[in-house]
Length: 114
Image (cartoon, rainbow, N blue to C red):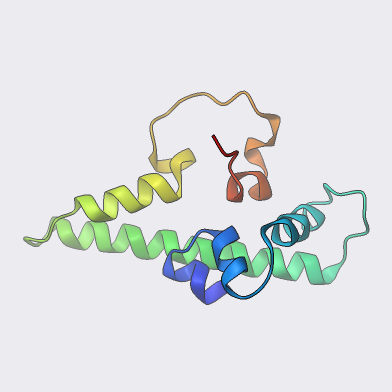
């Protein structure tokens, strides 16, 4: 799953690709943050750490690719689009959020559906 996240897939989709439902991935991340009524443990913390690291590598790869296109004739907009849509809380339009959950990784990984 982490390889897929690092390649740029959203965390819920990467989970589904390896046979783990969105609800289960969300639960595991929430349990790692001690935001679930059920017990948490080292397995959840390890999972969350690995998923966060893969997500950070995906972001780093996208930024690297965007900066590389600035020095070439390639179109940088593809990379900017990916960054903006994958991490809108960092690279998107700055619109204040009313949610208290916005600082939690699980909440950012599973944005509300419109």
